[in-house]
Image (tube, rainbow, N blue to C red):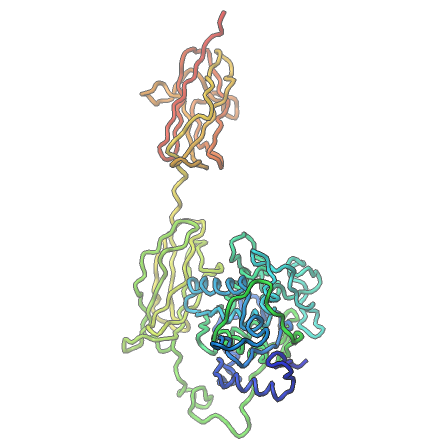
Length: 556
């Protein structure tokens, strides 16, 4: 099926000539990669991409919308009237959808600073995949009002992908379907799904979750999306089609020129029918997925590469070294002490600097950061290793580490990919959080605690622990029957508790307050001794309470 280019460019414009003018104009506007990159470079990209275990594109090469942006800039011209429907349906992005894209950009700027993901790229992909979540038809939480499902991937005109999720995401237990506003196939969502809105769910139908997941995928393998080759590789990883690449790049350039927010649900829907991409022929991948784009196109006859140019196979010694190959030395660049409590983000991030033989910084060298040791601490997306390119200053900043549940030490190692240079190691320490504490302990009732000899107390001791006036849950408490107010030794007579075998015990340890800070002690019993006795309770944090117990014979 051929693409329906140009159908929304101008009212009434439907000829192939108009479409050709549009593509030429977009190329002249220097949209990234529309005409400048050789065909063979459009498939180049960072290593480790697509993600491990992935054998097809994000969307399974599902159909996409081929509407192109208008020739005019989306920025309004002072005093001029907008063409009917042009700003709301073209440059306008629904509020929740736009917010999701921008929040994903901010999150990845912190976790993957070397990726340089622009939110406009997410907007461009969201435009061609689902028309910005079908014009922003989402609820207050950002979840689509109805599921957005691609066609059944049964091999009939599309990739053949048998069911991988038991119908959990797409409702199909025979084949997979692309799901949600960013059109993830279930197996890819299983690897890259995110909970961006903090509701405890990774939902491909939620624009916040889907936008962050898409951004993480585009940044995979240490890609720098400010680099044209990495940008093209990232987009082609979403849908392996040159037409798809050109369409996304057109919208990326359009949104970079300006856009505006419109209310949810008011965005226009694409006017073209979905276009099924036609990947270049190539060997089928395992699992019946869509074939690879195939070998790159040869140069046109009569224009062979000049001898001696970089990459000429006849002159291997003349090849230009990669930035990583130019690195002579890797050193720390001011990393602070790496410490964190369990479950928290490390405040410091590892920073290293790559230098050449002359001591000058090397830009665009690929630095691998790896977690080594017995730890469950991880980089974003649960990764143990990430690759980050160096900047113009030769520095590479590792993504923020999050401590796991296991305390102890481990090593964060930085190396130059493909080079046998001395690594830069940093020791990271995860500390166990302090135990829950309380600074006050009180009884929750004031009923007298009395008992006859050789009997059981009718009342059980009930307590509440607080810390700075608030309930203190999970606080370890010890209960001891003591000899006297000024003698905390365990008493050997008077009231007692019982152990599991029914034997008397006068100290209970490792008692814990519940989630409301409350604690009810085990039943108390008395021996034949009579008089007043003391029960002392202490907590982590220093709270203390002494309770009087009375054992007396009943009146005659």
